[in-house]
Image (cartoon, rainbow, N blue to C red; front, side):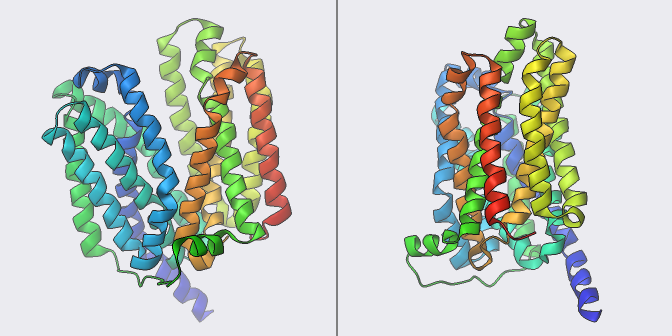
Length: 391
């Protein structure tokens, strides 16, 4: 009874730190998410074609493949050190557009920003995973993941206002200042963690982190659900235009719908994952996504139905992916930070490998994309039910 009380007290004392880390993640995620809707604005600002920035965005995705190397830093130097390193890279990136106010500066900003996010995200999750008992991690990690939708719903409009009021560089200045404030605050207020020093070469350490059926199942889960999501995400705008004509208003509403569905999915994980069970919630989310894949092609007869279908699709995906995070913190607990970066790499590969497949499938209609996505979801369900024993 006493140990349970002490456990709860320790977890509650972490809430201010979790709030600080959530605010930091919102800043980082805003820098990532603003690029997509504001892409033409930034292209005009540096006087290049949109395709030039798209090529940089592709490199940003591929930076996720170096995540395990950064995860090794978190294991050897500590989670707090790696979070601060990520913020330092991020701030340096944001400042670069003032040193070089051209395409080169913007490219450096996007790439360093992406690298900073790659360093910060898994280290932050591992920090919380180290300090919060597993039966409460859904609440704490779900709360942190609210930053992703918060960046889209609040951060991006704020950055848009800065551009309208000042210029295309203004958001980068604001994010650099906020990032620097977060760096100082985390440095002063977040408790330093003792690094889990392993005097083992990188590849043997990585092999040990993923060398179990359950750990490999987690990687397969991350790959499958991200690949399934990408098959629809790449083409849904084209599908809306093809079904209902070129309606910018419909695309804008679709973006808002996706933001709200992400927020709803993160909220469900935050409040129900610990009671319902992380593994069970993952299975519910992925099963729901299969249903959404089968329904979505049928909604192309009415724009309102299509928006409802997209909401359900992204709700179930976000539910799946956010519930996977607290579950993954216990799939390889002896190398938590390294494993979480390996999971990020699996998710990145899922997106990168299926991105060129999506348009090819769409040539046969949205149903083709959705059926393959449903198949990938079935793979995810199989590996979780067969190999993941953590609840």
